[in-house]
Length: 277
Image 1 (tube, one colour):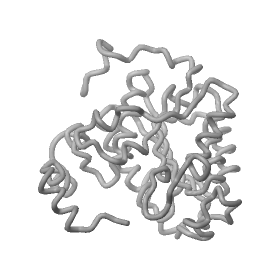
Image 2 (spheres, rainbow, N blue to C red):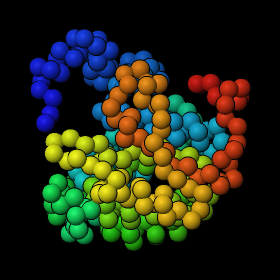
Image 3 (cartoon, rainbow, N blue to C red):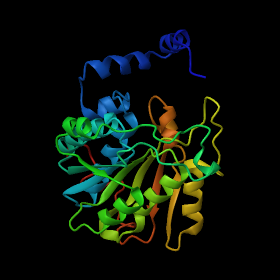
């Protein structure tokens, strides 16, 4: 069940910062950090994810990072990611390379109940490939079975370290394949990677749990990890943000605990911590 329009209006009147957010989305004024505070973006999870990934990359001395979207469909998310990458890169002085993975054919045949066939159907979100490519400027669209395309991607030389990933493949089985993105050597990653999981929050008869869908894929990844790597919720982050947004509960972090830069100090007093330094 979606929230009725009248309820949204009343909520905005009670919380004036929501009106400020709506204004800033259509009249982009103020610094990037100011707009981030008010979630003044069509996809605030992407904005925060890319910004904090680039900032960590800068703190660790990387001239560039990579960000990824799994599940491109009509291309709205990848186009937004591309624009945000340009804005964040300009602000922080870090190049942000953008990659989008998709079958190009819509959702594949589901494997079993774990793919939530009562929610998703084969062929859903089919892409108009040429139309999507026509909307992109620099982002790279990678088409095919994610279990194959991810493996080839990891074999590429000179890909900037990955810092943010959006997982929106809907199925358990597809997400399992996408999580293979973490199988490469340390040089391909920041030591902590923000991950937005689009399909872990319930609503409208979905009733998601750790026995199906993305949550099951995450649990199995953590249980089967032979290396010291885990994907965990970010406790308290939602409360640290001005609007305490619901999307923050969908943002988890991949920890590569044995990464050779995991212990590198980036706390207060670091020369590059302050915005704009």
